[in-house]
Length: 332
Image 1 (cartoon, rainbow, N blue to C red):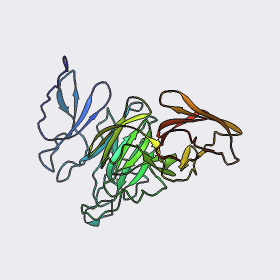
Image 2 (image 1 turned 45 degrees about the vertical axis):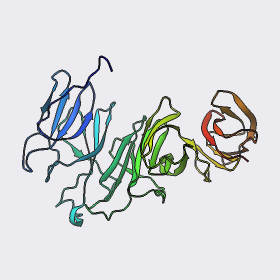
Image 3 (image 1 turned 120 degrees about the vertical axis):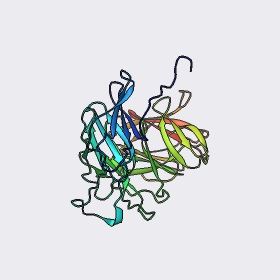
Image 4 (image 1 turned 180 degrees about the vertical axis):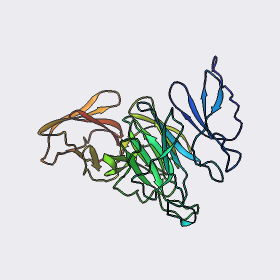
């Protein structure tokens, strides 16, 4: 656009990874010329000097620089966390003899990186690394030995910036293969390939998501949309503006905050619900199209029947103080 342009920064070698940090600075990982080279791998770019400045560092060097799949930066602690493409080559598992790196982190002002793998076991090959708005870090990681014979990755999360990792207890859905990807937006944590699932409650709840846009092919990534209810979804067939709605596929509401729909039977489970609760259905125009009072059972579950007079479409179901986006796509 007018008044904006790309600034070209000369790099002496191949750029492996770029990580924006604070104060307009950027950390840049470059390849080194040789295995035993002591030249800096990491460089810093800032607009004030308009060039890459290298400093000595301890980033792992092998046949090439250890590559990064993805990284995140926590502004509050000024911490950089990097997920790498670590392989267990030749089946080696003795880390005292063979250095394995997995996840590494550092303060953006420091130069030394430390391994941060507690809880990951042998799942050190990073496929995706994301951070949500609360500072929780999510890692899609698995075992890899440099061959094509490797298991599907698992989802881990850390509430202390990679200090420890916890594997989500629910297995990856069977229709997601080894090419599964992960996205984190304002709407939550998602794993996806041709199908998409939302992960909630520390992975105890993995629910299918229905975007009601038909067959979109393979889902590559999802990012925040215009507001907290929308997302931009990039797929093999195009780019879509979607809402992360409760799927109409049958699934049980067994954890707090979950909703299930079977035909027109709706179940809401929340530890915040008690007694008589008001339920409203609101159209996207903002008009309330249905109201009723529903009793909550002693397990925190609330059940009601979806109004028969409503046409196919996207609605907000307001239950107490919480709201859920619902795609209704089958007539009774």
